[in-house]
Length: 200
Image (cartoon, rainbow, N blue to C red; front, side, top):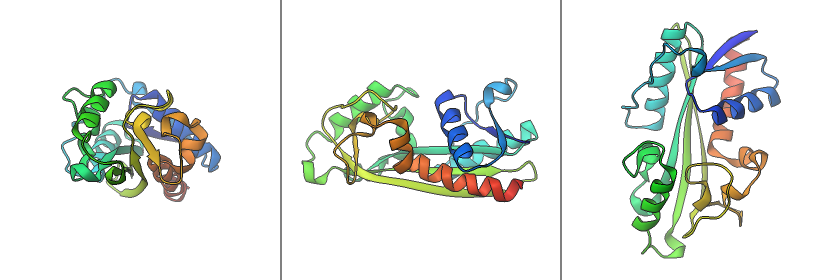
């Protein structure tokens, strides 16, 4: 069975992609970066989601000698000119402080009326081979940012994002419901097909 490395130490992302690969019938063994403690974290210095994902995937493919998958994603709020975008995880200053990021974002758009709070989640997912070959796919999920947190599932900005056509936030959905419509679910399902083609 082919081995593929997902360039993350986030156990939730690994479980998510394993589930999507299994549902797509793609026979690969997915490993996380915890299996490669010698590989350092890659600085996300790109200016787009795709650039950041490519940086991570190529670095991990080169250092592991295996095909590598990486993704970068974030919330793009229309009233903030598309921000926080690639800075979503560190919007409040420190990386991954979900509560502080939520507080800051809600404060920044507190004066924006309900009809003008459109936003979308974007995800770029990449497969990079040790040879340097690369494939990029993207997914989006449009919706609105609400004024107060609702729900305890998911992570990041999920408690304040209601997808188009829904009355619930993504934090109020089951993992399967969220996967079916989410930016990362869309991108990872497209990437599963790419992995099947490239590694078959």
